[in-house]
Length: 420
Image (cartoon, rainbow, N blue to C red; front, side, top):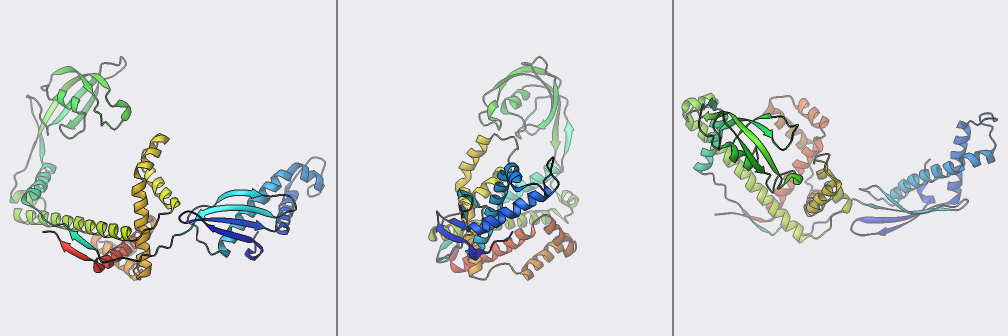
């Protein structure tokens, strides 16, 4: 059914933040017609012993199906009247309507109350006049050397050692048996010492063994162990060191650079430095953007709608393990709620600035960004666009372009000074 909005009596009250409370009255004649329609539908479908289909007396139908008809009628009227009232009041809900008080009596008007959050319309009154310091972009030789070392490690070769005690950085093969469990079976493990793959007590125990030897150790799980139930717990283990390997690194020379498709070692070092400087510049830009938004939010006070914050929290909570206890999920939500509120306020501020200053990404700008992605990946733009739409990423791309334009606008409204 469709309800004429002009037949409804609707009262709207502004609640906390962006909450709207609606009191809606549906005239008795509309209620009666809908109930008759539902009862007619039931009559046409009902089958009862001793009566032909469609010939069941009204009083018998009422006796058998009256309660169900009342419930279906009420649900239909609540849904349709809610939609009609929202249209008539030109509201834009961002949360599902919550039904409050309902009064429904035979032959009388239907009255009910609903509440929901509406789409915020934020007005940013001050967007500039701030002073923000951009961090210095400095890349030292030590940072370049650290990257080159990682590249050598990634291209190194593991060499077995026959004896000696293992050190941090050695790859070890161990066999571990839990002595506290009678049914336990020894298990083999391989990992690199010093990279956190085993708890500290286990690594210290392994460092006391030579290849081919074993020992019994009592190890304690650290207080920051991810599984809270095991923190502080002790285990009695028998550990055997089966193998030990050391990583031989390639020489840092032109031959090594050539193996990575660079013309010389100088060419490789220049590329590493350029990449580090680009990353540092990107991080500095993020600092500027974050500080600008802090100033904007401080200068323009407004609240984030609770329903939007709740959806943000639900999305973050959904990224955790499925077996996380409900109380832990709620603790996590409470801990990150301030961050969620700030994230929502930031999103609303960006949207408001984009609307007010004509900075929303245009179809042409989106198309140009798709072409750019296609060129970088040596594929056709149609392929990129299809993949973005398939993964639900097109809106994210539009939002990214809009955000970039908004922050460029904000930088023009303020003074950005370079850190010494």
